[in-house]
Structure formats: structure tokens, C-alpha cells
Image 1 (tube, rainbow, N blue to C red):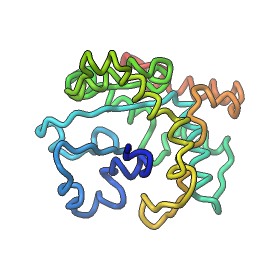
Image 2: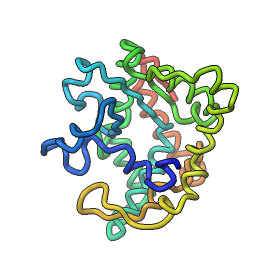
Image 3: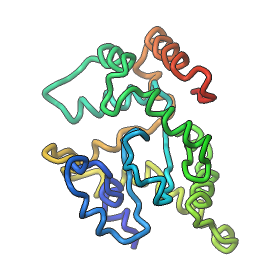
Length: 231
């Protein structure tokens, strides 16, 4: 019996900042058995100060900015049904750095620089690369977390099975993710299916004009110049 079959990924891995934990005690998180697995959308600068001292390992997953824009646009319009925003306006906000967790480029750069300086503590993944070779990235993740697959597990196809069970198609098809409503944010109930739309690399091409794409590409390229990070 797999936990993911009866519990949404968002419930299996608690958020560091939600619901409203930033301003309140995190006793429920402290009560979790160690080692703990948590997720967050917070930029690196806002992570708890004890993260490095405690030896916490951070895995950062970033997406191509144009796909981030389109995905966020769909998600926000799904969440705030009474406040629909047009895509061109969403692009303007994104290009100005007006997003929930700060400018996209600053968010990526915070974790990118840490991954370069401390590769044993911060692992930087690109979504497109991960989707192109998921088994490679599952192995990288296991090694980084200090739990590499054994030769027996490799021979038995465990890596490939992990990829299959955790694939978007597999998770989206589960009733726990395709039906029902949850309130993970706090005061904002949402359909569980809202978290599963397409997950397709390059989906932005179905929504952005060449001009819109070029505008965002130019801004991101300028913001990341000299960092060694590119999309």
C-alpha cells in the first residue's frame, strides 16, 4: 500500500509556510519524526536561519519562465474565480517581478548561487531536464539525500517503478487527486484537481505570441546575465 494512492502529494509533504506558519508556531512540524521532508515556495533568503546549521539538504526545482507564467496564470484564475486576469496583464506583472514569492529571476538565482557554492547541500534541478530523463534525476536525488539505490534495487527495476508511480499521469489519475476539495492554504478551499493541469514542457507555445515570448526571454536573460544560469 502506497501513501500516494490515498493521500495527495501536497498533504504527504507539508508546506513550511502554509497554512500561515510564517507568523505562528510550527509545533505540528516539529512533532514530525526526523528526518523530516518539507516543501516550500519561499526564496532562499527567507528560509529559516537554522537550515544550514542543521545540515538540511535543499532540492530546488525550477521551470522555464514562460511555462511558469502560463502555469501560474491558469492556477490563479482557477483559485480566484471572481478575479480573472488576462494573460497579457499577467505577463506585464511577471516582467515587473510582481509575483507571489518575488521576482522569478531572484528566486532562481538565490538557490542557483547556493547550489554552486554548496553542491553537497543544495541540489538544483531544471524541470525540462528532469522530464527528459526522469530515471537519471531520481538516482541523483537518491544519492544527494544519502539514500542511493542498491544494486539489487537497480536490477529489480525499482528506479523505473518509482518514476512510473510518481509520474504526472499516474498521480493525476488517482481519485484522491482528481476529485474532492482541500484547504491547504488556509481559508481558501480548492478542488484537488487544480494542482494537476498538464505538466507539459513548452506548453507556453499554446498561449504566448512570439512577441510576448521574446519580451519575457529578453528580461530573464538580462536578469540572469553573468550568473551561469540560463533557460
